[in-house]
Amino acid sequence: MNLKESFRYQNFLSSMINEAGASLIAPSHCLTTTKNHLRNKVNDGATDMQETVDVGEFPANDSVLDFMLFLIGEREKLTTAIGAAKASIGFDLDAAVETNKSRQQACRSINGMLRSKASKRTEKGTDYKFNAEGNQTTYYYDVEVVTTEAFDRAKAKNAVRDLISKADKTSAAIDSAMINTHVEYEPPFNVNDTFEDVMAEFLAKQ
Image (cartoon, rainbow, N blue to C red; front, side, top):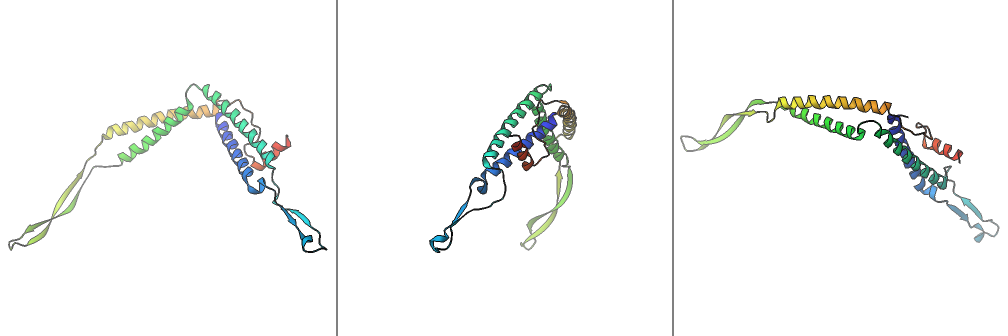
């Protein structure tokens, strides 16, 4: 499998481990409930009866535990194989992915800044003065509001172009590595199978 497939399979194994864990802690899977019907105590002609509460079919917890331990071992093998495959690429894949995330975040912030435009508008101001009779009166006047850019627009645009260019080149290298890098690992189950399918296949091999 290639790196892209191996990451998907890694997630698949994690999902199976989580489902096995959920099965282990289900109360009806952990405990068997028995009801003893003590009829004879109150009716000499009646027979006592023991009833095991039916909670449906499910894999026994001992088997699920074995399955979970197997999956953990498989995930460790796969993660080790992925690490070896990454080392053969020629560049740090994880660093490239994280750096591209930073570039994309920076572009979003810079483009948000670039949407801020210089402008001029007029508002109404209010003040007070005394008229000829000595009374305080209100008067209104124009307030010219001017906003100017507090950043270097050309520098910001150049930064975005540079970030996008580097991100595109890095993305191409990442995509190529994800498809063309081989991971030495043989998957034990089909990645599209359900927990029930995989559990049944595991039990069949025991």
